[in-house]
Image (cartoon, rainbow, N blue to C red):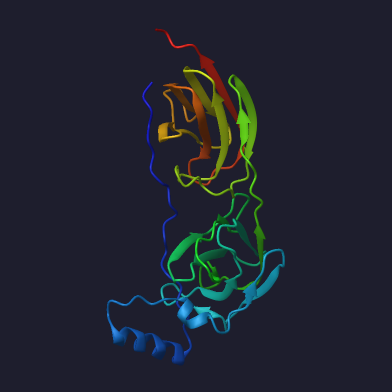
Length: 276
């Protein structure tokens, strides 16, 4: 069966947040633009001096009201924080509010956009996971979805422990679960992912199936030399299935959700002797 190589399913970007209602800030922006029209505005340029710092494990509380910064594009209000990070250590950030539909935007220390998140896997509260790859504080913007979204909110950030992938020996049956906040595998990039290792002591024909009634599964296989095969849907539905003949060695199996899916899944790995 032929395999399908998918591309990254990235969340659409709604645009950078801009704080309004502060004349000095508008003048500063114009001054920056006056230097060079090709120079991009860097949000951290304006906020690094006075933004509160969010540290892992310590909830931070905030309030969106009429005095909060305002987005020139749609009038939504926002507050800005600095997120304390360590390069290479995965982070999970959640914005919680019972008062309004929260929206999360994250910038790297150099001002580049990392992600924008509207909702989380369990509702309207946005959740994101990422691995910082730069030194310095990341800029976290909490906003409402529209100009009427005001009220208290809470920001939670946690450092995620890195767990060694489970090593399988075919045949194998695994019952797994995606919370929906896991980071996409960088080699797959379609959604939350769970990795497994597979050791083969001889050449084999593999059938790898990822099944779920909760989300659209994607299964990917990588070897020592990189990508081997990938499948999203079969002719029978949204479950993923691979048939591939591979030599002995160590392989990495990635089970992913297409988009923002979450829930239980089953991974089946069957091994057959290739026909000469």
